Image 1 (cartoon, rainbow, N blue to C red):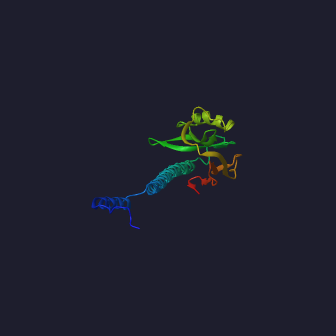
Image 2 (image 1 turned 120 degrees about the horizontal axis):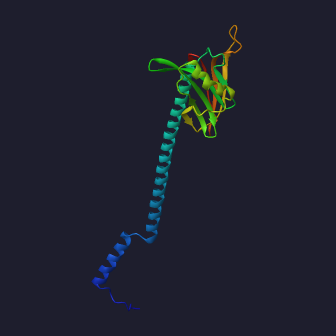
Image 3 (image 1 turned 45 degrees about the vertical axis):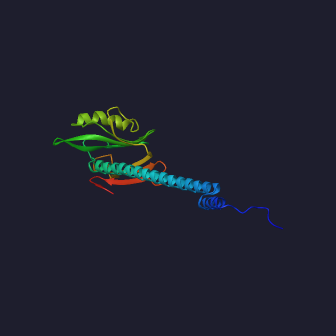
Length: 216
């Protein structure tokens, strides 16, 4: 049977070819959606990676600053020990140890004049503190401030100035290293200190030992 369809004109053939070419050269809706999903996932991963890198850098910088503070504490402790008075003419101990605080007398050079200061290390509800008294020029000044420290080492006088604060230190254990009493003296002679600081969120404490004129 003869077909009833008329032959396609040249114009219809040309249009059909162009439509077929455009269909082959373009993207379907599914392809576009897949591409958008891939780009979104790549962007999300890149953002998370950048965020982790920034937070890691901040953590490293914070740790470095904290380590610098601990280093400052250890250096100050060593300096205070090196300048401690192993003995004195006060007719009283030159150190005082409480449950939270430890105190001792040390030399203090100021404008070519040797004075004395009382230095203390201890903890409170706000963390670690280092205290120091004003320079004391004579025995009378020393006794006036020192006797109150001997009575209650854990009570901090208003005369004491806070020179170092570290909130990350939560507790302190300290003990004095003493020699046998000299002949005619009832009080053991101070030779140095052992000290241990417990840190917040850190399993390893800071421990130091020092002797007069040296540190360990």
